Image (cartoon, rainbow, N blue to C red; front, top):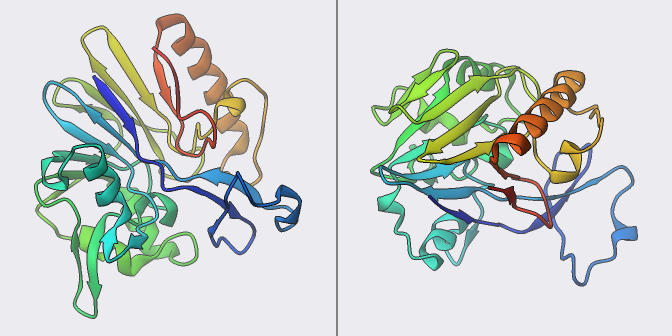
Length: 245
């Protein structure tokens, strides 16, 4: 399998839940707002024998009228039309902003025309119930009643090699993925396992729906994955997008 990180850059985020660009080379860490976090926004594309998989969809920012996610893919030699599956861990705005394009008063269309999107049914329903600021429902409208969207109910396996499991840890209906192709296993934990350093400590985050469960799952996954040679992908790590394998 081929793994390509699609970094959209580093950002600070505080209680306002606004993502503010942060240049790690020139900006002063001390000038960040008190209590703010420094995170990367980093979807991944995984090319297997069967699929071109996109793992989460970034913030949805545009550069020169082009979706940044599309530009990042094209810079790596992949046309957005080649993406066959979009796997969504959850629908918070920093993970789901790039699912649609051409946002107008008439709504948006899905940004990957030949892909099937995989979303937990309960997560989609909850996003519209909860709304702003964690979820931007107008950006998610294109997922509803769409033939390209496959809503999932609970745990399962896609096409015999992509396992998904609902954890209810970072958010109420968050899911994680294992992609097993030949002798290689890729684990994508989304915001349940967002950064390498959290895998190695008993870190409990107040921003998680169930921080204790998140911590326990990270320790379980790290122990098992280290023993079995998994490749871990980290959506929010500013230095280490992936490790292992």
